[in-house]
Amino acid sequence: MNFKENLKNKGIRLSKPRLMVLEFFEQNKKGHFSIYEIYEELKNQNKKISFTSVYRSCKLLERLGYIRPISFEERHIHYESNLNPHIHFQCVSCGKVEEKELTNPSEISKIIKTEDDNFIVTSIKIQALGVCEECQKKQRREL
Image 1 (cartoon, helix red, strand yellow):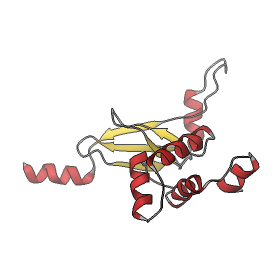
Image 2 (spheres, rainbow, N blue to C red):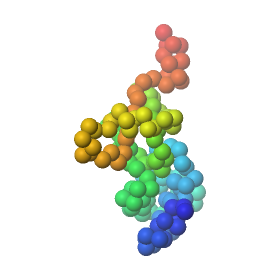
Image 3 (cartoon, helix red, strand yellow):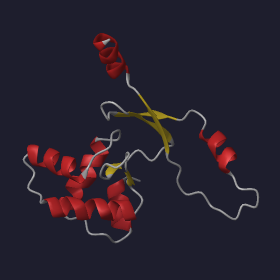
Image 4 (cartoon, rainbow, N blue to C red):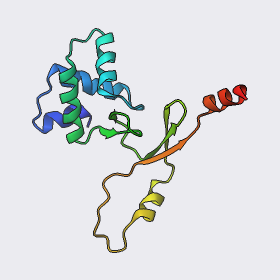
């Protein structure tokens, strides 16, 4: 069952703005997008949607668990629809963020499992900071 069918089954109205934002995330499974970036992309596709509608649609999809917010350092919130366990690699020089799927996510679950099991883990965020290949090359040229 896809996002649209799930929303309909939950009795949530699929307004045009909601559908536009939902389709944006269905077409962009990888990546991290600010509300402004989503708004600009939809506008560039000649879609008629307001910034407020994008914001409200993202908040609804977040509340329903279809997307999740993520913030990198002190920057504003971005949203991602890739809910599979993955690591974010962020370059401290240029800010670029790449993601890599975890090959064995159950290993992480074993590490963070509490001894008394009184804590239920609902989400894990892993972020590695470093310098990307492009910035490394740039730094070598500057030496």
